[in-house]
Amino acid sequence: MSFLVAVVTAAISLLLPNYYRSTTVFVAANPNLARPEIFFGKNNLGADLYGSDTDIDRILAIAESNELIDHLVDSFDLYTHYRINAQNPKASYRVRMRFRKLYEVKKTKFNVLELSVEDRDPELAAAIANAARELVNLIGEGLVKSGQKATLKSYEANILNKSAQVIVLGDSLAKIRARFQIYNTAAQSEDLTEQLVETQSFFYRQKGRLESMRANPRISRDSVAYTEALVNGLEQEMDSINLKMSLLNEGQVLLSVLETQYFSANGQLGEDLERAKLLQAAYSAVVPSIILVEAAEVPVVKIRPKRSILVITAGMLAFLMSVLAILLFHAYRNIEWRLIFKER
Image (cartoon, rainbow, N blue to C red; front, side):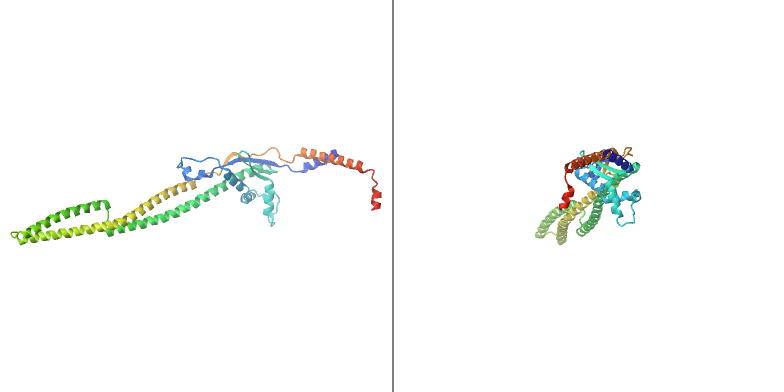
């Protein structure tokens, strides 16, 4: 009996198709490698080449996503390959479920990722595995690029605002300088102070001389009148210098505030421009999201079915069932089953 079951099982197992498994191995890369300060060596600390557990989980999520599976289904025409009617309303669900049964991504104890694909065609299994790995890399790169793009847009918008602010502050500075006639605060303040000291000194000398001339009747009226005119002119000149100094002091306060704002905004604008250049360069660069360890190769040995195991298992089960049947038969052979059923 066991031999017969084993023979039948062997015959049936021969009808089962052979499946081949192809595996590609890779590790998650550190997404911080795409940061400008690290990419261009601006950070002395640097960054690890390999990703953390969080990065590995992200790559696993990408590898198991419907986006990746749908792309593989379309690329390799798996509807036709799996003999699924694409017009069926549940076709997308069925092809995904069929593919997931033949597709596996796992993390090993060494934090290495293994992506495996099974198929009847060994060459197709290897092609799908390699394509899946490349697609994982592309989607991972896309996630990093989308973050970089959002940051870059933020910097570009900030640069536009800062540029407009610098222009407005520059115009305000020009107007303040024109209004208060301020061009070089330190030099003008020094010049006006010297002029005022010299004019005041000359004024007081001439004023004392005028008083002496008035007290002396022998001085002619023309000389006195000339000195009076000179003193009045010096007084007007002092008033003019004081007015200029007052305007300078008044404008200097406004100018100091505006200059502080202008240079601060201009400095921030320069930093943002430099940062935007680095971001743009990093955005244009290619930084992989995974690091290849081993590409998938065309398998030469089938992964299943294990026919010998099937035959041995079936034979053992048949033998055990036969033994159990014999034991039951011997245990209940002396029972009068007809009498029992008649009494009921």
